[in-house]
Image 1 (cartoon, rainbow, N blue to C red):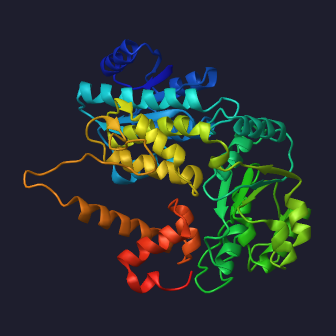
Image 2 (image 1 turned 180 degrees about the vertical axis):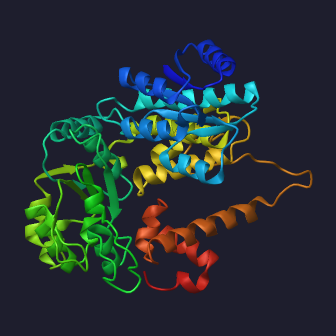
Image 3 (image 1 turned 120 degrees about the horizontal axis):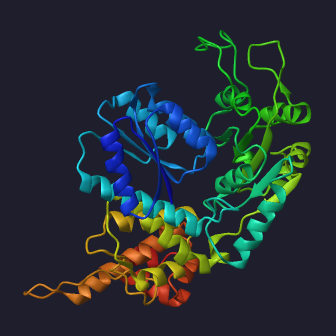
Length: 446
């Protein structure tokens, strides 16, 4: 691993270099912004330790430059003069952490070990060719091949996939593998904003265009000039705005709200949706001409249930990520936990899996992730403690059975046949158990 140390105090720079060399890292040292920029021009670094107060400027200048050139490079800021505004900007830029002087060497070593684990995991699970997409299944390998084929060609791409499958990750990978990788990647969720706000966010506006427009504002299309614009949930874009987007795609020109002057930009558009756009076209909710403009190339992301063999890799990746984030030590991952996850429906796909792993890391106590899962069937079995006075097993089992029946009914909107299927019961068995716990519901029709 290659590390850049930017620190103007020679003795402290030597200490930092020695600590890093003890980890087995290759270290390049710089005592000024000028020296650091020269090093950056010569080679790429996995990690940079950056002092903020320097003889020829602020270290934040270098942090911005590093993150612009190589977003994957991790940065740790070391300073005695960190203001709240500086720290906020640093984290917005993607800095890993900051250390205040004077610092404890052992604390710094732990921080370096944690960031090192993160870098190693990224290298292990994120192929250099397809940044950020984890998996070794046939479905994922095919997806990676498609991304590699499409990325170099400056055409619009439509990404299809269920919620939580990683559509933005694929869009970023296409951007990183394209000739636009050193230009902006700008993303917007078309379903997250009301129509009027979505239009102003995309196209920008002139001062006085509407109430509250107190100054000119660049839209995201203009901010993405030279780079990539990612339109997530494009299937939720209102029809009037679809027409305006279509014109932009055809001409690469647009007019900000409240203006009469056209602007021209060079932007690659990648769109994504979890909807069936051909069905939306039939319903009159989506323009057919816009669909064909966006769908020059279509990439489909497989749901997690079609690549379950990737679950252990994903669990390990997320486990290490959150262990670093929350300062937890993971000795091993329970095989019962993995088995439990392999059997879950995971309708939320990778996003749902990530949330489950994050929760388990937060609750981690003994260093074994998912230690309370038996791996036999789908029920998570936590540690069982029987008090001296004993327990009422019948009451416990009845309560658990009742909770699962109610949860199944809630999930299926009260449809008993589907609820029975979810619980692995016949309809007769389900009705019997339901009538036992809720007599008034057990008699009702399915």
